[in-house]
Structure formats: C-alpha cells, structure tokens
Amino acid sequence: MKKRIVLAGIFLFSWVFGVRAQGTTGTISGTVKDQQGAAVAGASVRIVNDETSESRVIPADSDGRYWASLPPGNYRISIDQQGFEGVEESVALAPARDIVVDFERREAGSGGSRAIISSLESLSATIAPRTVRELPLLSRSYDALIPLVPGIIPYTPGAGFSFEFSAGPRFSADGGRGYTNSFLLDGTDINDHANGPPGGASFQSNPGIEAVRELTVATGPSNAEYGRASGAVVSAITRSGNNQFHGSAYGYHSNSALNEPNFFDFGMPPYRRHQFGGALGGPIHKDRTFFFVNYEGARQGFNFSSGSIVPDNCARQGLTVPISTASACGGPVPGLQPAVLPYVNALWPAPNGGGFGPFG
Image 1: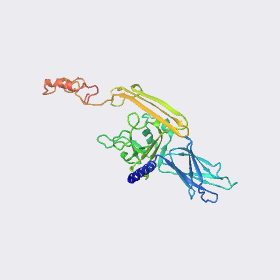
Image 2: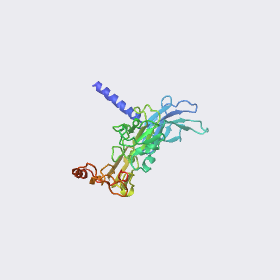
Image 3: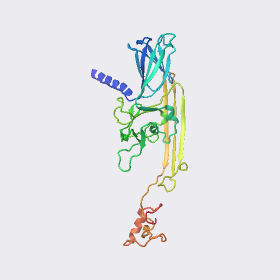
Image 4: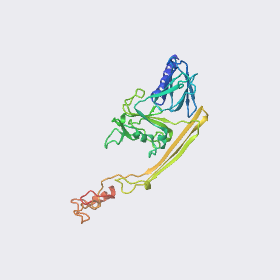
C-alpha cells in the first residue's frame, strides 16, 4: 500500500512540474525591499488576472522574494503592505516567459514607492492573440504564422523519396533540418508520425486558429525545459473563457471560378471548398468557473491534373509520327500486327494535350 502511495506521489509531482517544463505557463517573480534595501519578509504580493479576476496572494520569503507560475494573460501586481499603497504594475505574460517585478519602498517625499519591471528573455518570439485570430490565412491553421518569426524559412522537400513528409508545411529554423523541430499544444507533444508539423484543423487533428490564444516559437539554443528537439520549439496555447461572453462564427468559400489553373492543367479542374465553424466562451460562475468551445469543419471536392504518355492519334491508327508539318501522320508502322490496334485503343485513353514528337 505504501509503495502505491509513493508511486502515485511521484507521478503527481512529475505531472505538475512537467506542465511547467513544457512551456505552457510563464512566471512572475521579484523582491520586496524597504528604503534601506532590506528584505520585507512576509509581504503579501497580490497578482490579479484582468480577464478572469482570479486573485492570488503570495507571501514573500525571508529574503523578500516571491515567485508564481501562471497561465498566459494580463496581470496586475501590487503589495498589500503599509508603505506600498497605490503601487501597482500591469504586465502581459506570455508562455515560457519570465517577468521580474521588484518593489522598493521609499521615504515619504522622495517620490514614493516604486516597481521595477524586467524580463528574462530567451531567443524566442510570441505571436500575440490578435495576430493569431485576425491575420487572413488560407489554411486557417496557426502553423501558417510560423514563417513570421525571424530565422524561420519554409521549404518543400525535394522530389523522390524523402523522410520529410508531414501533415503540415515544413520549415527550417536557423538552418536546421525540418524534422528536428518540436510542436507542443498545451504542453503535449503533437508532432506527427514523421516528426513534422501536425497540419490544420479541418483535415487534421490540430485545432484551428479560433481555438488558439497565442503561439510561441523558440528558435535559439535548446532550453532545458523543452528537451528532445535540436531545432525550433513551437508551443501553442488554447483559449479559455473569462468573465465576458465572447464568440465568433465564420464561413469561407473557394471554387473553380475564384482560382486559376496551374501550368500543367488543361483548363480549370472542378474545385470547391467550404470551411466553417464557430467559437463561444464565457463564465459559468463569475470569477471562478469558465467554459470555451470551438468547432471547425470543412467540405472539399476537387479534381487534379496528372500527365501521362499515351499513344497519339497516329499511333492509334498504326501510323508513325508526321514527317513534316504538311502531313497529318507518317506511313504505317513497320511490322505492326493489325490485331494489336484494338488493344491500344482499349487500354490507353485518347490524348487531350500536346504531343512529344518533332511536330507534336
């Protein structure tokens, strides 16, 4: 029985700290000092989430230090201590970001108490919520935003056999290989079977941009909290509800009339695509319990062109290619058995494109 309790405790410990290790939260920390620079032990540091009104009070330790691991959001930090009245700072906390807010109490008449904000930045970029939801994206997938980050170069794997096949677009981070990147969703590894991008929402298992709060792309030397990948680490955080009801509905349509054929198409192939969905979030119990739901669907039908070499109209009659532009076909194919021609016409479709002969 004791062994089971110990194992359960180890699992819970590793799960709680593993969530932080995967970059789904950020930290707010700092010190509280008086006018002489001495630590104010036991000072109550209040951190309030602007969106949900959730409040957390953290007592400073004997050295005046405080520390909190929090989900991404906008926060207000203040000190519930005499001499720090009216001192409050607002910060925007991104995933895997460490913000330091130091408070210093001053004598009356010397400008009052103050807060000093700094941050411990890694070599990464955060794509803000507004950018995620408002930039027009044909795929409606947040992985289309990754090339906005400096050092990211999208590419298409070469023809022929390649290990670099994936559900989503491939990219190189600082010159690295595409399959050395790591993708996280709320701290969970979502790389596909080829260690590539997971793809979009409608035709893959990845949430669409309406369900994503923000995106962090770490391109620098691998941080210890991520591990596993030697390339970039893409961490997406899903949205949650707050004290205000908010929602959206959308529909996107594309068809053959709105597109152009590519170089190899003989005319415009039939094509239509409908992508639609909606999201809704809000409070269940104000300041305490919230909900958020998202749905995204797609319907798509299309044909595509592929080129094949088939016998031309002359060969289907048992004739050679034309010997000049003045003649439609050449002479009979030497040694051809007439019984073969029905099979030629039955097994190969008639050509509908240009020929490959000297006058085709």
